[in-house]
Length: 142
Image (tube, rainbow, N blue to C red):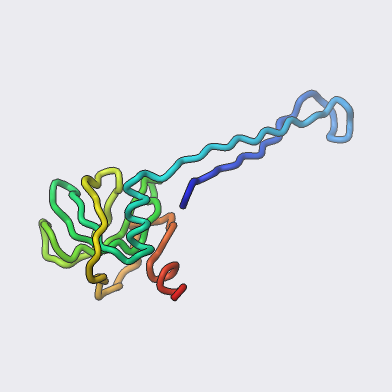
């Protein structure tokens, strides 16, 4: 996801009459805006493409992760589904983590063994607007 572009093409009726009459005119407008991904998004996305680990702070805890799916959540916020294999946690590790990238601090990618979750019992709901999935977009290409 390099830049997100949204294009709107709207017609506005000006005057009265039917579409074939001279008094009926349409005005077309095209508005474009872009939302560039954050530096954190780019770091996590590149880590997925290269199957690299990411270390960061999230929720005040040091995390060691392998990101698997990146995109946006249902609120349109940048999000990543990652397998946390080490670091600090309030629960047992390893486990799946859904991270809002706006809350990630001090992220950096590093080399190391790629870790995967062993169970896919439920459909993930973390990333609803998927940009990149390691299992579909990266490994399928090999």
